[in-house]
Image (cartoon, rainbow, N blue to C red; front, side, top):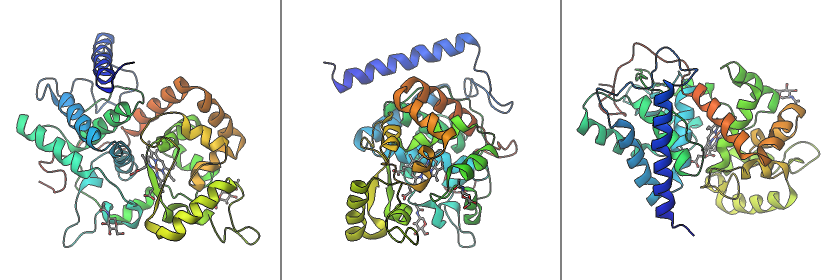
Length: 328
Ligand code: HEM
Ligand SMILES: *[C@@H]1O[C@H](CO)[C@@H](O)[C@H](O)[C@H]1NC(C)=O
Ligand SMILES: *[C@@H]1O[C@H](CO)[C@@H](O)[C@H](O)[C@H]1NC(C)=O
């Protein structure tokens, strides 16, 4: 049996080999013009290594932060593009995205701060917070057992962060057809929607996000009929005693990036309406069934989706913040 440490070492070697292979191939297809594979090659050659190490240390102390880091990148990119707007703190005259009700318990900000601090020490004013989010999400996924994919860099940090903009985020009550349209408007295919939803293989949700399924669901049912009865009962007792702030895991292995989420959907154990709905319409159900049995298909489609997500609405006129929380 390999120890956790030696598995980690082994995985690090794989990263090195992958990086070399990609460099040899001259980059990846599908990188938007604004980004490149070797953006910090001259200006901050160890940037990616710094991110990888700080993420690794943070997850070693608290493996649940992998979920937080992945979600931060998603919330950044879906609101005003990948411009680190999600990281800005509110000011006396502006309520930032992170303080909108839709922020729903974002976490991992202190990991981003630690990465930024380490990078500012090495190459001041060089690596954007938006790139840090993209790299940290990738490293979190990989460290949690998910795929390793190459992230092009060169994103710029934006100047705007308005709580009202978070209407762009999908609500947990949405059904598959609305989600499909919403993701298509950002250029995502249906397989990418389903694979990206598989990001919920990590982390937890608060009762506030799924209590719509537990009681007064509709006129005839107390509980969402698409929710497994025994799970409904246990969630009911979690939320009954803990209220809106109590949490439940999306799948049974919430710190491991695996196919468990999809097997859960097959067993009607999806947590949010927006999760379980994927197993409830023919086109998405086919994909749920495929990803449930094929980790390679899930990983491949997830990374295609992440590459697209990481390039949403890039700003060419942004800057590089010195602190990710405050405008320069
Ligand atoms: C498809 C539409 C999506 C909806 C409706 C949705 C909604 C939500 C909600 C309501 C929560 C729980 C918030 C809380 O109660 O604390 C959550 C958590 C999370 N979401 Fe999503 N999400 C979606 C897509 C995504 C995508 C594309 C990703 C990343 C690829 C993602 C990654 C996560 C992660 C990792 C968590 C757990 C966070 C933690 O444990 O701190 N989600 N999402
Ligand atoms: C999220 O927003 C709420 C207000 O809706 C606020 O109390 C909370 O501090 C915010 N969370 C973060 C991490 O900023
Ligand atoms: C999905 O939700 C939308 C908006 O609430 C609704 O109009 C539509 O009929 C729903 N679709 C299905 C298949 O339930």
